[in-house]
Length: 307
Ligand code: HEC
Ligand code: HEC
Image (cartoon, rainbow, N blue to C red; front, side, top):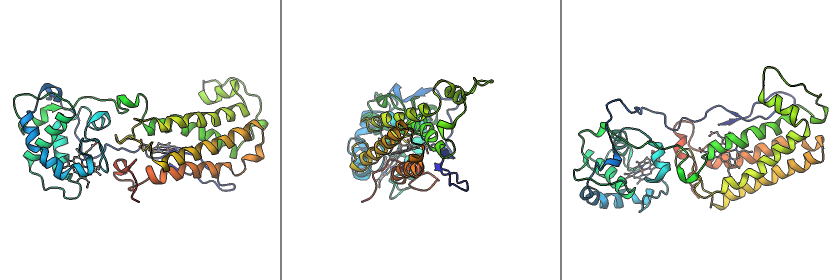
């Protein structure tokens, strides 16, 4: 979550992350020492998956897609999905299905149906079938594979990691202009003990740091449009949506403005800049990040908004 730290005269804007949002919080048990099998070892049968397919199509496909690719509900295959369950006991996933799905009428599936639905997800996800059916016995001893939270197809960070790596530090460098005129900064000595930001300031002092921060924001924007980029919750970032593209374009504009103003070494030109930058970040966050309140909002992120 981004908050604005308001300091009197003038109102100072900074980005501070109060909640790195524990998306995966809430009653999940970590893999216990007793876990002995993995879903890669043929833990379900194809008959079992075939048997439950009609139930999936009738009760789940409308929200999770006919190929489990995700729609209103996230995908039920692939790296993003697996990252949510990385290394967890299979019993947790079956509990999640039985206790909370279908989203609009939870508690209506039997235990066996919930187990079968997990088997169907593994079949579509191309985990190998075996001869025996998956059943309640030993469910807690079977583990989901360990998958990096970024997902292999995103190649690098998820949206939140990207924001924290680029948008966060560089915006704060620009927000800092509310307090300091770079042309009035005294020449600095190498700090002892080593401090990364202060040391950097001796190498690229004054306005150079501002040029760089603005450039970092501009140049990072294509990364927000990379196909396959995932949000923390495993949902694909809505990179094809017109409104998302517009929010990204707005970020380019505001960062360009910072770049040109910085190149002109025009400190007064930054007078109302923090407000603009803050607004640009917030416009996208309102729709795609800050939805659903704090509790459980992680799963609501990056959802296509209702018209
Ligand atoms: C009305 C829409 C809707 C229907 C129908 C629905 N789901 Fe979901 N599902 C969601 C939403 C929204 C989420 C994300 C919120 C959450 O996790 O509670 C979700 C989450 C999930 C998750 C967790 C995904 C993850 O990445 O951790 C699983 C597993 C799941 N659903 C399975 C099912 C199954 C199986 C069915 C059919 C029996 C089903 N869902 C039916 C909307 C739906
Ligand atoms: C095009 C939309 C968009 C724009 C523009 C945008 N953000 Fe984000 N930001 C997001 C989304 C979506 C998330 C949550 C991603 C996730 O959960 O993986 C996020 C997450 C973050 C986070 C991580 C904290 C958290 O709660 O996960 C920070 C920090 C952040 N943004 C800062 C910024 C700043 C600063 C700007 C402006 C310079 C900005 N963002 C512009 C969409 C955007």
